[in-house]
Structures are given as structure tokens and as C-alpha cells.
Length: 427
Image (tube, rainbow, N blue to C red; front, side, top):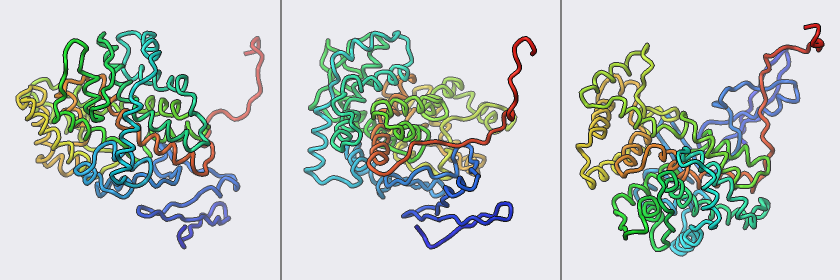
């Protein structure tokens, strides 16, 4: 807590409020004293409310800064990998060589799912949205792995975290295979995390597959760059669900449901839908003009960000990965990707977009990469959920291992005041 104090005057009465200072970032005024004096704060969307204290991730949207445990995302993306970043999020520090090897081995040993899960999938229609399936199968893990559901036990929380990180690629790939009617592929534990995922997604029992290392590297970058993003809607949902004492699998399933919303996890899917709507490079100027017209509902998807008022730091890394993937696959002339590259150029050079800082964001480039790899748009949000799992579970564990209260947001009630019931025959 800082030496600063805040005071609030209401109806001639002055309330003294505590002020807390974090390591970096703005000071936070504690308003809990208001409740005892008959007042609540009103903050739609909780955009000015700190609902928790956390040591995991810090964002400065104005400066385009994203730190995991103090480490800039650009450095992690260049020098680290996804599983090492998972370790950082879970334990608060980068591992040494032996710690990393032990962690990677633990994840590898938990990649399989109970065989009865394959029967569980058969309850879904083949044309079900992959996110609908993921909500169900991830929540159902608590029925198969109920040997580690004591949330007060640190070891139970750790094994649940490992299981979730390890099994999410398996479940995601099973979801894809189920929707296209292909047999499930078992994980191969000699492969890296991203290689294993691509193997389970695109391999088949009839022939041996070899995972392209350039694509695996890009996939690892996508996972890493989505691993955590502070107190966003889905992470806050995981925390709120967890505050009730719910098991971790149920909490992560709740996070997946929140991520499914098009305003949250559906952004890269919206990018591809926009490219399909434009359809041809000859129509780019037409749609750019529509985007500039404030009276036109059309919006360019994948440009700008609610949090970042500067360049999304993740986008710089993702752009390099996108360029590598397109060059590796020889897709520079793919019609949709030609449109994407032209839009990118316009956004970076056109005064209208530059002035408003509508730069290409991480969703723009990840959408391009996933499309190039051959992942259907319906699976894009599933990939996002897979990558975000360590962040969700790290925030859940941080909350459960500390002091917390069940979440109970307040409201500004504007409905009818008390009124007397009128019998049906007199209404």
C-alpha cells in the first residue's frame, strides 16, 4: 500500500479510501469502505475496477507493453517456447535446464485422454461447432480425473494444471477429426508440443506423416503469444467460477464458453470472414472506403485493439511467423492472402489508419497463418483456447492458493419499486 490516500465526499460526509500501488502501473483506490456506508461503485464492463491482485501478467496498452512475470513478450517469443512460457506462468519464474526437462516430460506423459472420451464424442452431432464440443469435453474431464479435484491440495492443483495443458491439444485435434469423420490420432510423445498437435490434426493411420518444422514453429508462436493476456473476459470468468470452489476443469470450460463470444476469441475467425467478404483484390479500395465511412457498418477486422492504443507487441512477432509460413508453403499468391497482405500495407501506410493507430493486431496475422496451414476457421477459437489454457489455470491457481472471496458483483437497480400483488381476476 502506498502513502497516498483518497477521500470521497458524499452528502457532506467524507470517506477515507486506501490507495494501493503495484510494482508498475496505475495506483488502485480501494472502494470496499463504500459498501458499509450504503454505496456501490458503478463501472459497466469493469474497465476501471481491479477485481484481484496478480503477479502473472502486466499490460500497458498505451505503450504497447506485455510482460509475463516481468519478461517482455517479444523476448519470450524470440528466445523461449510455449512450454517454457507455461512454466513461467504457472510458477512465476523461468525454469533452469533440469526443471524445464522435468516439466516437458510431465506434460508428455499426460497427453493421452481416457479411452472412454472417444465414446463421449459420439453424443455430439458431426456438424456441431468445435467450441460447443470443447465446452463439453473439457468440463467432462472432471468425471474422468476426479482423483485430483481437491482444490485445497497444492499437488492436486498442480497435476490438474499439467493434465489440462497436456490434454488440450489432444481434445482439440479429436474435436476436429470428429467433425470431419476421420479417426482419432494418438499423441506421439517423441514429438514437441506443437508438432504433436499438428500430427494429431492432420495425420491419419493410413500413412506416415512428417510435420513441417516451419509450421510447427509458427504453431508454437501462436500458442505462446496467446498464453495469457491479464484480466480479460475469459480469464475473469475462470476466476469468478473458481471463486465458488468449482473444480479446475469446470472453470476452464467456463473460460472456453466466454472465449467463444465473437467479441473475444472469435476475432481471427472474423478476419477470414472479412477476407472472404472482400473476395477479390480488385475490391479492396471499395471496402477500405466503407471502413472509413462512419455511417457504414462495415469494419476491417484484425486492426486495432481494445487494450493496445499502440502497436500490439504480439503482432510484430506474428507478422514474421506469417511471412515465414507463406514463403514455406508458396502461398504468396493465394487470393485471400493477397488481399490480407494488401490490407496490411494500407493499414501501415494510409494516414487514416496510422492516425487512429489501427495497426494489424495478433488476430490478423494468426488468422493468416492458421488459414495457410489448413486449419478451418471453425477451429480458430479452439486454437485460441488451447493456447490460453496455461494463463487460465495460472490465474485460477493463484487465486485458490491465496486469500479470496466468492465473486459477487453489485448492480444499479432501475426496475420497479416495491408493488403489491394483484390477483389474476383483477388485472
